[in-house]
Image (cartoon, rainbow, N blue to C red; front, side):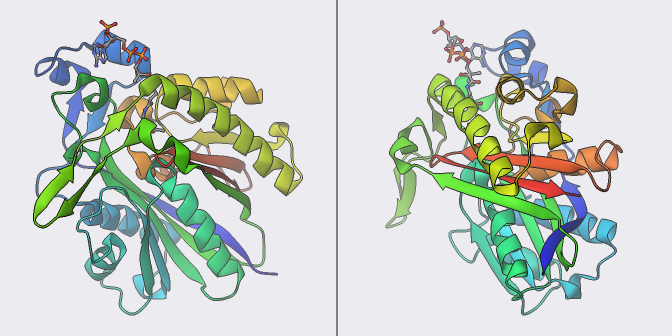
Length: 319
Ligand code: ACO
């Protein structure tokens, strides 16, 4: 039987850090308001010249180095992003060229903040089918480009960055099971409702959100999808060593852990230092907790996404 295993992880974060106090100098907000409502203290913001494919390539190089894998071994690239470099070609193709890889399958997945969990589940299926052997799965975002910096209700919440994993075929289990869901009837509570037509922006190019509706929806589905994934794998919440939900807001993370009956000490939190990096948040958190030694080989990690669409999903992973 073929399984897929995560054999390396990496991060790509812009050097520029913007603190809550920095934001308070340019809009009517405060460190106290942002910290108590969201847990966010700072976020990384890309330079105008830095794109999703640049950050994704940085994260990929780090993941390939950690996995000790030559880029030419990669036969599948899936990039999850809601902030692609272009309308087309895909960010995956642009990133593939930046990594000097030729010929392999490469495409983007659009599931907003659930994008990485969607991409990981897809890559797992490709590998388990025998079609591919070694995949690069990347979440990468430059949300600073789609924020209205005059809207304090949304501008303070997000950051830029990328996370990547190398997923390899193995005879031992790695990804134990994945569940993916969507409900497009909730499209309006979180969206960037615009497009380009005839050379003009039609609608709005900025992120809009009904914060409280998103909060309630996220906690509900993160609890449900964790339980569904555990049931699929024949495991219980007590079997989870680490919980990594999408890093939207520390209160959503803590409420999810509490509902699931998982101790706060098993929750990985990076939203304080990265803000909400959408599709990048889960692989960034995974990489950080592997590199600081918390997540070890053999540990079972629940990865969870929830975001615009609405979309949500989870993967239970044995490291
Ligand atoms: N600084 C200071 N005051 C602010 C700010 C700010 N940055 N933003 C809003 N306020 C004010 C509002 O104007 C309002 O003032 P008023 O009472 O005078 O009208 C007051 O704060 C309360 O505003 P609410 O929007 O009701 O605040 P709430 O307690 O709901 O917190 C928040 C807002 C943090 C966005 C919360 O709803 C939340 O966390 N929602 C989850 C959304 C989320 O995490 N989204 C991330 C993207 S979605 C995803 O990734 C799945």
